[in-house]
Amino acid sequence: MLLCLVGCDKKDVSSSKYIGTWEATDLSLLGEKEAFQATLVLNGDGSSVLTADDDATNCSWVEIGNGIKLKGDAKVTFKANGDKLEATILGAKLSFERK
Image 1 (cartoon, rainbow, N blue to C red):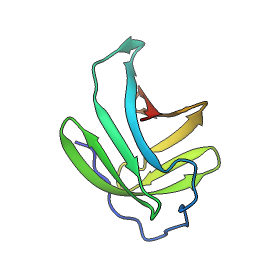
Image 2 (cartoon, rainbow, N blue to C red):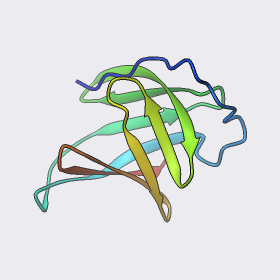
Image 3 (cartoon, rainbow, N blue to C red):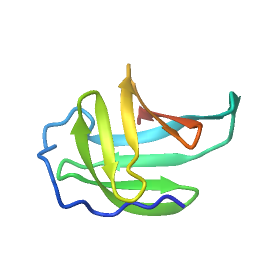
């Protein structure tokens, strides 16, 4: 289960290039690709919805230097890599592409 909580330090993301729907394309763990379905919707008001394994979680997000950061307990940071957003969580590498 992925958990995000609404943050209180909102920054204006209304014109961010990251706004939109992103789908997971890869999950690699110890160099092995694993089956994984997830969708990340980033809204212009700083809200987002992360859906993984049919579990939807409401989050907030901010744009950082070269990517985004989901706000909440998980504090997941995604770095931009070309047309992808990538994060490493507990050794697992996640890649998302704009839908």
